[in-house]
Amino acid sequence: MPEVAIYAPGTPMWIDLATSDVGASSAFYGGLFGWVFKSAGPDSGGYGMFTLKGKEVAGIGPQQNPQQPPSWSMYVATEDANATAKKVKEAGGKVVAEPFDVMQAGRMGVFQDPSGAYFSVWQPGEHNGSEIVNEDNTWGWSELNTDDIAKAKPFYQKVFGWGLKENPGAQPYTEWQVNGRSVGGGMQALPPNVPPHWATYFNVADVNAAIDKVKKLGGQVLMGPQDTPQGPFAVIRDPQGAVFEIIQFRG
Image (cartoon, rainbow, N blue to C red):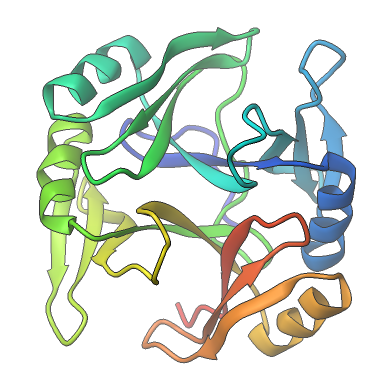
């Protein structure tokens, strides 16, 4: 089980769900992945952690803006959230929320890249990120879906120092790299009426069995299962409206 204690700067290190109903969403993801909800405390504004085998794998909390749909967010590790905010501005991105302290857990900021995709950064305090990744029923990958990958590439290189591994073909695909290791992906592909975004992938042992669970738990299958060289995947919408992907990863 790949347990992680510390993430190198520039590495995606945490995900969380903003939802209209924390209780109902917790029941859905608990039924699908076996996650258990743990409150972050009375001063957390309803925020909590999803755990698997006692380890924190993701976060969940109420939507801060009811006008925006429920969604998953990705956080990238940084040693200095303020310095990262400055780099975002210099690289042509937008600061949505200036860096701020989250109790003793850490410091975060929210940004948009030049193509419009939202992402966050996390400067660790007591919280260091997802404690289990790349296993069944845990976060395995984040992928930028955008209509302007050419604009996004130099932005993330300037902000996080990401290297690029290009995969040409009918659907060109970029792998973002930290110290020579791929930590996420990106491509020029958007369904109609969908804004640029960072998609969240969860690993599952059997994509068809997971799809059956999704349907029984009140979720929707928006696409798939569809085969890829990495494994079959499907696009899912949870009962509150948040979209994510599941993949039966081949390694």
